[in-house]
View 1 (cartoon, rainbow, N blue to C red):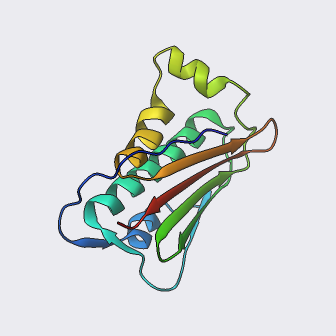
View 2 (view 1 turned 90 degrees about the vertical axis):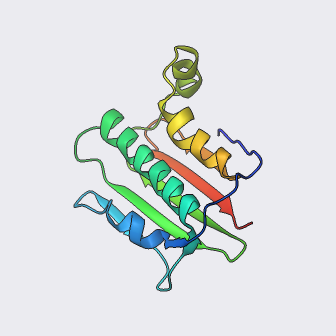
Length: 142
């Protein structure tokens, strides 16, 4: 389990529906589900959150066997939004994320964790051998 939280960054004016931004990720291998109602967030937050999800999906494509299925679930909890990206891949070996970070490969750290921390959110990564990986992103509404 890897977690992180930091202070929120100011958003630009305007809003965007997170569901619309994430629907572009759908494919035969990627399923995106969310509430029937719009999940409106400040534009910058919605776009950065969508970019973090995109980076998580790129990690699946890069590190999992071809054909690995992925599920993206958007939950609007009123006080915040949670997006889960869960795959059925082989899981991340224990210590691998820390090892990659120490080798200067900051893919997950910069593209997912860093983006979300900059918005004042948190990320939990739950994984295990042959259990797949779930990246759970929580962004509070300010």
